[in-house]
Length: 317
Image (cartoon, rainbow, N blue to C red; front, side, top):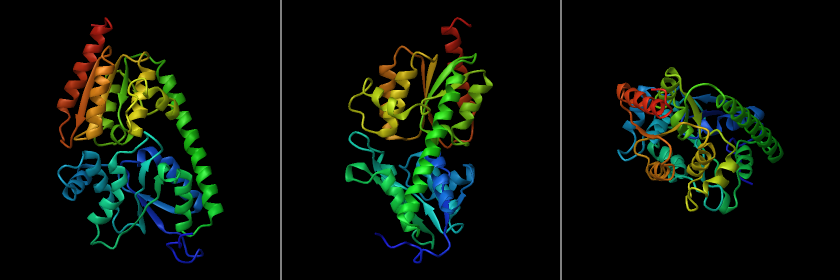
């Protein structure tokens, strides 16, 4: 058993800082419920804004994708405001269920980038091929924070149930959206892009303003999506990409068009999006790559044109 980082189990629990970026949008419910069950206080970085992007860009290499730069800006905003900043290291969930390498490297990149500060970081490692499940990872994390294995395991299982229930509820709500009037547009995008208030949410808001109904590919039963993804590509290995591709395959007959929303310059997305364009050639598709530019006029013009195409195709124009 690893020695608790707090030394004595009776020591007060630390304050955990959580960057409001990247995996936060997938694991928010799991993380918050896990730490709450343990009595650990969490602080979040502010929502993405121009300054956070500027700060993240300043400490990142030029080749880093926009999502990584945003993440580094969020990490920087938490420096000195918590005891530990949580940055998980997730390698894979099994065979052909790999993560993009950035999710393996973020912890080490952040520690190295801010090595001259007194800020401490904490992680948990998920590596199913190496015999470390998510449950194992969270149990170990709880023990390192000074809690018993039994308490850590119980907290994880309660948090996992909360996460599962939350996702099921959101999926049900989306099924109701499919019954609404208006053009149904499938948003094929990672949650940390489409839900980011600075780069992704403005796109979603503008679609709704034009009367369209956004349908999110990442709001689907993940296991079903993974199974269906092989019908599009049996060799695709990235977990999140497989989920999106499988979900797109399932939703293909329920929507009017597809918007591929990604952050510049994401390598896996550039390949996966091209594959989707070729495999779903019967559907109108708009491929949008977001950058850190302030102006929205160009984005709005492309969205308006795409909506007009869908209306024309549907006989509304």
